[in-house]
Image (tube, rainbow, N blue to C red; front, side, top):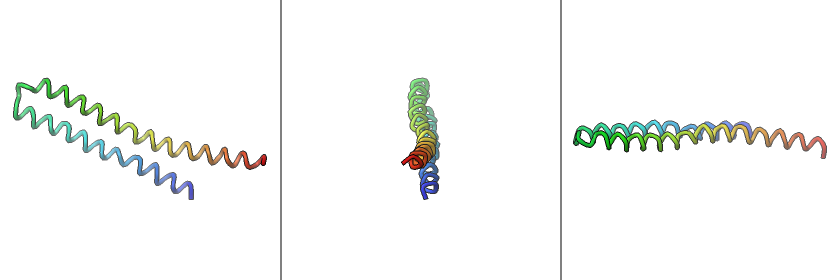
Length: 88
């Protein structure tokens, strides 16, 4: 039961990757629209777009980190618990 819950939790943590991809698409879509409206601010808009991309990608990096954390922490606690039960 714990293995199934661990797999579901790790899978749910990786759903954030899809949200990050949508967010990055929105950032660069907004950049294209803003440059089309006002080409003289293209350089400044590009700087803001890169900042938005970096922040969105930073949030996206937490998804695999949480998935690996969920899968490894519960596994090590389970092994540690079974190892301790041998001596008690």
